[in-house]
Length: 447
Image 1 (tube, rainbow, N blue to C red):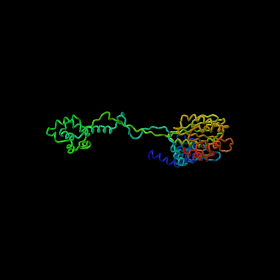
Image 2 (cartoon, rainbow, N blue to C red; image 1 turned 30 degrees about the vertical axis):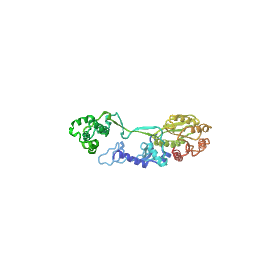
Image 3 (spheres, rainbow, N blue to C red; image 1 turned 120 degrees about the horizontal axis):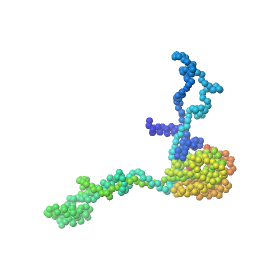
Image 4 (spheres, rainbow, N blue to C red; image 1 turned 120 degrees about the vertical axis):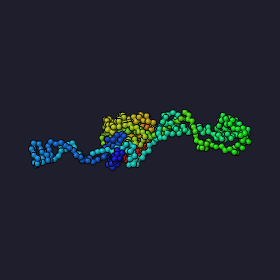
């Protein structure tokens, strides 16, 4: 088996052992994954093996320290050691202990965002269709179909060069017998024959006719009484037929005939997206809430990255103020202070000025526990949601205990935009069971 077979077999085993995406998103450990790789953990069997240990206490059939023996003597087997409680073997927690999972250990099955998006489409029935932007991406690929006047000698188009030379050769070829018989017409000399032949697309030079006429005996110069009689009795042979019969002796190539192949320039519109993830990091956003936010937002990031040709992500943390953070810190950062959600939208609006809506698909996803400073939602957030152009705005409320009377931000958004709005989607994630429905509600809009 070669390396390709090993990789194929690894994929097959991973497909069989790894968890379904839904189970992974709801309950799996996302910490080994990053923005470019989704790592799905699964258990593999650790096969037993032999281990050599050097011991100073001897063993079965081996004399012990200080024991004198001769060949043939019977050697006593030492009693097995035990601890004070009478339990045999190593103490708990020593190196080599397989631990709670016995003889199993974690391995990872890796998916890139494109594979993740394809499988999530299949499992959840999403099938989001990215909108193409107006920005054109130029690619030079495919066959060499264009020709330019300069280029490396290796790309010289010999077929084109030969055709140009052949065209020139065909242009100067003519039926010499037809022209010679024309000169044998009464009262038709070289000048009149030249005019007649040119009118009939016979490319013959005046000099050739002068020389040919001089070689015709005088008694043959009146063979035909008129050009009409000449036309009735002499059949003209086309240049193509002459070349088929006689071939081409010489083809002249000229520098101006040289053309060099150049790859076809293909212009295509690409799909590109900018995603802004917003998270409340105030003191009320404890670990359980942060974990639920990650289970919704991280899969949506992977999905959108896999769906679009180009994806750009920004991560905005906020309490009373907003600032950008790295993705690795976004789901774990925490801070004190109160909550003013509009600060995050102020920063998002500033970021999006670099990504015009006519060229970029834009998503703004926010998450928090529903708390906001007094009147901030009505006075600031709602007007900003209406003014910031985006394919979709979404708010993910997480409130596991569901007893927070101050969590009214999601309710106010639904009162303004409606529970089934496509422009501002509101979801509530209070447990792992709410994660998949939230993702389907947000991404299933096909915006």
